[in-house]
Length: 264
Image (cartoon, rainbow, N blue to C red):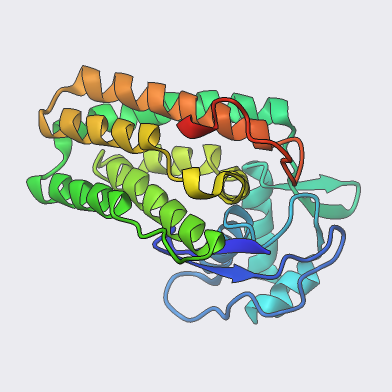
């Protein structure tokens, strides 16, 4: 099972993951009028890739995707071209597959993510409104109060990860720089599955006090309008947490917890 987070990770539910090489035949979502169908197709498919609805390495076809979305192949073709440009889809001759990044590539993406999130935190400390800062603080407080006792690990992991995504998304949005937000979204396209795997493996140790403390320090820097400190703390937090997550990248099941598991 994998977690499918809805719209910026504010909610999550378990969904069945197709086997490698299979196309998910269940409807992803139906598109509507309003924004162009190509834009809607791009947004819908991108969300399905980054939220884990499609498996890395899974083969897909233009026709099947169009059928799932309830549109003609033309807007899907345009969406596919954009996703290939972002390297979320890969084409080998005529076969189209969901990108399956190597650990080395994930580590490179982590470095990029850390730099971009640091800039976002710097911008947010300068440009965030008081209401935005208050909302970032509220999300952090909700993360600290997640109930664990008597709940399934998957439920706790889903809630914590959704709140973590929401926290970072609100900091990113508070930068008031849409281009930067889009770049961060591309750099973090494949981190959801790793985060969920880590959360399930760590069980009661997740979320760790270290990560929550770092979020609290970032919130304090933002509220102090300290641009340099906000950027430095965000970069350090992103790199530390990301490197811990990469310990889960090589296998689907981790038999023993890494020595630094408490810091994820």
